Image 1 (cartoon, rainbow, N blue to C red):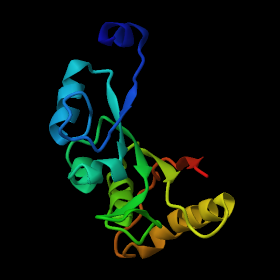
Image 2: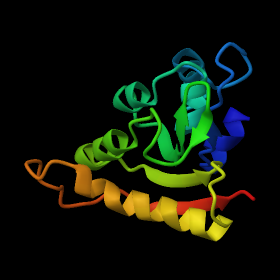
Image 3: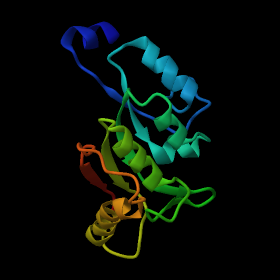
Length: 160
């Protein structure tokens, strides 16, 4: 596959999963690096929930080698509970988004609404979008915003 990707200048972004022990999955820092060594064209979509479920730190991944990451797939998790409402879990979403902004990483955000709240899918999606809009308000005003903002929220997956 790699020769064709390089010939036609395609850059697939592999979705990271929680199966960190499976050698055929991209689910750990080691498997991510192994995949990236296969081709300069390969990129990654960091699903922060799956990566966390596999026992990895999404913040550390982002702060490590960020250049092959095209998207952060945003969701929130708690150990033993699975998906939870954005901002109530253990994934440090504001810190990751602030890192993207402060470092001016060209990374887009994808919201995955896999938490089933009490509202309709539309209402729950609106709550997620509102949360993402409020995140910058939590950042210290002592840190100046960069001139160029990171890419906006790319799109929202709806699950019913």
